[in-house]
Image 1 (cartoon, rainbow, N blue to C red):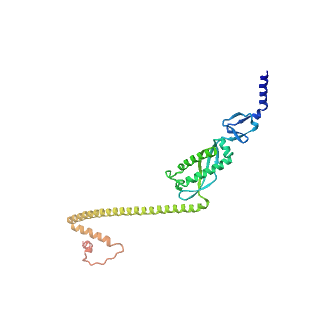
Image 2 (image 1 turned 180 degrees about the horizontal axis):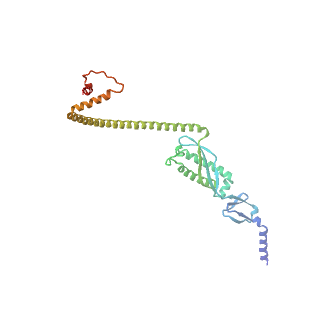
Image 3 (image 1 turned 45 degrees about the vertical axis):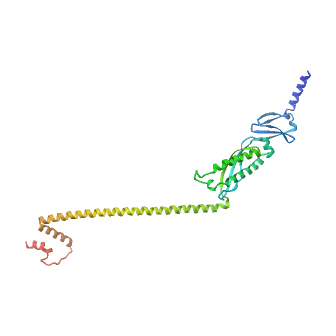
Length: 293
């Protein structure tokens, strides 16, 4: 009977003191239970938790979700002494809530420390990388992924050991020049583009002259060959004509002479021509013979 009364009293005490003996941990949280500032319990799993001395204890809760931290723009010096402004972001998560609470306590403190780690690691990596490896249209010369992989690993090791957090990813969002250097960089870019354009134009002019010279040489060769063939054809034609004339002359010399005289008339006489020639002239022989008849 007495034992039943004791059990009933204990149950009644638990019911009355329930709100002071239990606490919940959400599935998106970790909890660290402390007593007089000293950690006594770490709750990594969600659920209802029993704490008989909760009135003497304090429960600190921390998010276990992935968090995104946009780092401030930072200026670095590359291997070839060029200043670049880098904007990056990190994705991180609390991994050791006790270490996190003891070292930084909240998100603002964690991101401030994380910013220092990222800055030092990025500065070291970019200082050993030429600018052409960071900004380049040639895929083979582009080195940014190879540069960022070890930076992420070193940041991950340091953040886990020093802050109790896990760096899931680290990426560069934007690379830029400092404002005071932009104009000089743009001028150099314009000068470089003009130099390349001048080079292309000169090469084009040179190629054009070569093409014109080759075309002119080919034209001269074609014309010479055509002239040669034309002379040969004209020579053959004149020779054939001479043979024909000789044959005609042999057949009827008088008729040939008559025809040639008429052809001469056609060339030297028109409707407005007046000729004064001797009567015994060869040119007038055809006319005079006709008149005699």
